Image (cartoon, rainbow, N blue to C red; front, side, top):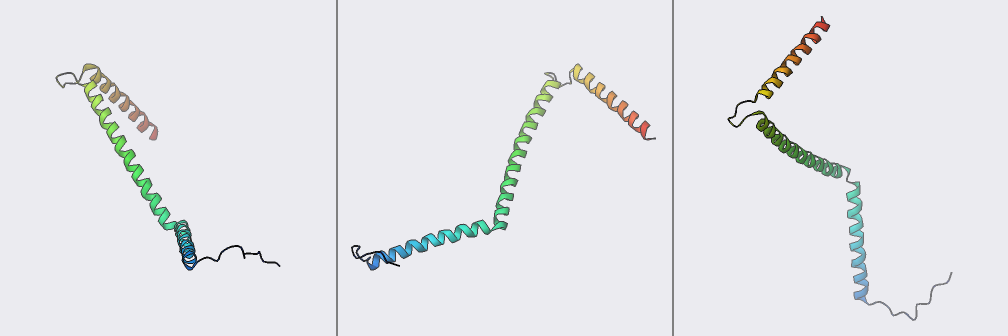
Length: 112
C-alpha cells in the first residue's frame, strides 16, 4: 500500500494542531449532548406532558371565555330592559319542563 506524497504540504504548527483538537472536542461534546437528549426518554416525556397540560389549560381558558360570553348574550336575550324575563322565554322554559317531565314519566314507567 502506498502512502500519499505529503512532502509538498507544510507541517501544521502546534497551534493549528491544538485548534483542530479543540474543534474536535467541541464537535464530540455536541454529539454526546445530542445523543444524551435523544436517549433521555423520561425527560422528553415530561416535556411533552408539560406542553400538553399547557395547551389544555389554554383551551379551557378560551372555552371558559366563550361560555361566559354566550351566557351573557343568552341572559341579555332572555331579559327585557328592566331585567324581567320576556314572555317567550317563560313559555319556552315551561315547554322544556313539560317535555322533561313527560320523558321522565315514560322512562320510569318502562323500568317498572
